[in-house]
Image (cartoon, rainbow, N blue to C red):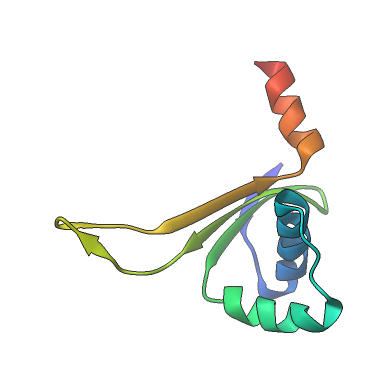
Length: 89
């Protein structure tokens, strides 16, 4: 397994994983616009060979509440891969 920051070419795999994890379909015509939206995110993937098994989106923004700043993070994984982790526990 390898953890690495995803390149622009990897973002299609990222979208497929998001569609699976959140159970939605995105028309092929909308994919380029969605990729343009997530280009500025820091997206890291866990790869098993050529298969993306999980990903982490770090969405940069600046908000300060009571002198603390924050960020938005999303984490998705394919269900069969998540189940392997559950069985190991």
